[in-house]
Amino acid sequence: MNIRRASCCCGQLVVTCKGDPVRVSMCHCFACQKRTGSVFGAQARFKTEEVTVEGRSTDYLRIGDEGNRIHFHFCPDCGSTVYYRFESAPELTAVTVGAFADSTFPAPVFSVYEDRKHAWVVVPEGAEHMA
Image 1 (cartoon, rainbow, N blue to C red):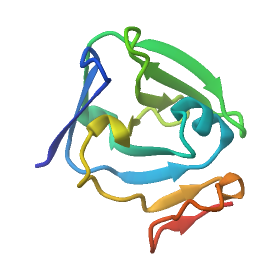
Image 2: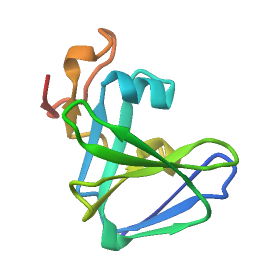
Image 3: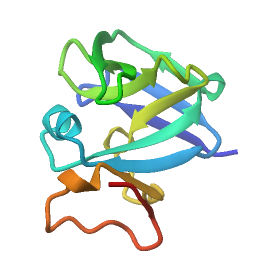
Image 4: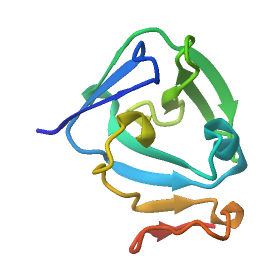
């Protein structure tokens, strides 16, 4: 069984995930662009029962475009967002792909909010697309 470890920049907030992600996706919405400081956010969803969180986090509640309530957890020391949970899907925990610091991490298979995607961003071949 795969065990993956994600953490914030300073290492205070650590998430350990057992098994493979349920789905890896990329989101081009403006909120993810602002949250990451990049042109999209990349997340890997894992079964919550296979996720262990160690360390302190600050919870930021954001209401998504469709009304989803999303709790983003970031390190109160360095500010890195490490994981988040959707109130509508408590059985899943999304972990930011960059927090794994693993260039061999699986590529996204799903791309959302592509109507807000920067023209020069390339979505992996074979990924499912959603406007």
